[in-house]
Image 1 (cartoon, rainbow, N blue to C red):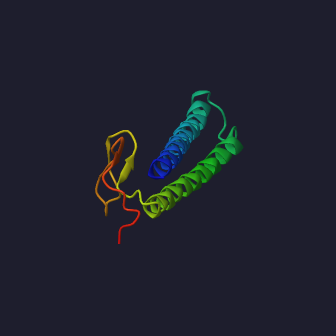
Image 2: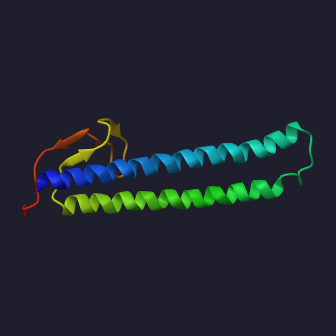
Image 3: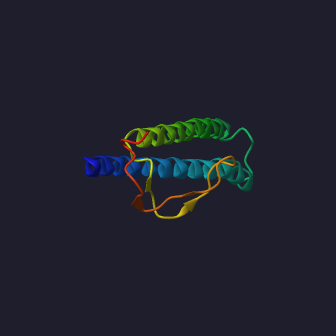
Length: 123
């Protein structure tokens, strides 16, 4: 039973991390596009009116991607709660690195996949 819960949690964690990376990549690419539009317009010596609508929709897209990132961060928090509820609070998923947490929660070890204890029946 524990093995099935761990496998399920690992599968979901991998999908979560992939979604987080994809959203971050989309933000970075869209930000680059937003920077290129006015830069290239100026280099081509074109009127500021040229490409204005494209720039504005790119900026709006950045807002939507920011909202998507906030959503995936909230999903991450909810899944952390679900992990605890499954009795897997001592299990870490990730690449084994050390990730900096929010300022109120300093860095958190992200062990490859370790299990310190099964807390399912604790408390």
